[in-house]
Image (cartoon, rainbow, N blue to C red; front, side, top):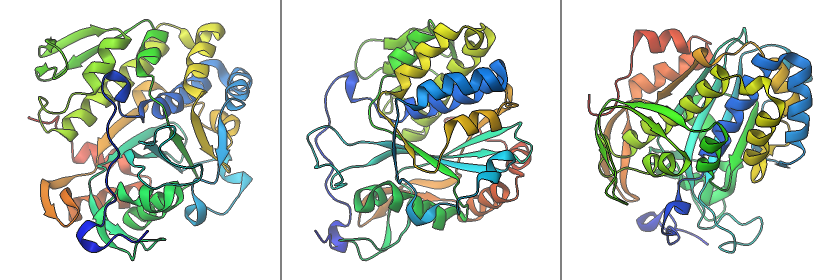
Length: 351
């Protein structure tokens, strides 16, 4: 189907109601963090055994297409490495297998592992960023929202678009198709999240005042869905999602979960049920490669932007800050991204 420029983005499918309509990216990121933490806490042999069991539960597909780095087994022996994390908004029964029509990439993240493999930087790229999306079947190419790339050509086309935008070549990719953030939080017996502003739920009477809160799985899921009553809208939601994911990683490490094989196995298997990984990504090798990364060395960031309400033919979009985004992506390519972030600290939305 061809989408004319006046309706360049295919219509979004109806949203399911209730907490099960939660954005579907969290599982992917938590799994990746868990893999990194497994490697650091358990050492090479333990990480290899646990990830081997986990990897057998995940599907493998060609997620990167031509955007993938040429296959080189030696590249996993040292850094830097770059991974793409996508969250799909498809639902069972809405599209034929292999068809991307109507699907969306809810969340797009670039994960950079440093040259010394002792640091990780996770960069959120706003899904509504107004960028140049290359031609695909039914799409002539041109400016559009970034998440439309997935609808036009699936994960490989999203990867192609992100590579064009960032100049960063990708070593692997992961995509999640089902959300179960509540199970993840419950697997670590709840998390403590400190919020720099007050958040009022649009789904209940719940209010999270500025400060620290202990959240169980259900409450964490509700908190992470908030957008309308959060400073910065979607950007505030991204910030809050990062807070919860970081809290899961920190608690798992601090309380010794990663030295408890049964508890860790529960976390990984829960996450793996609907995870798809790129055919060239070996999670066992990744776990061994990243064994030096600790939670304190995992940093989160968002690509700088100048407007969240840019009026376009595809609807309201995000205008990236071209100069700062260019600097950030160059820092990723140069393996100086954490130094760049230290020199350009990012404030929480609303501050």
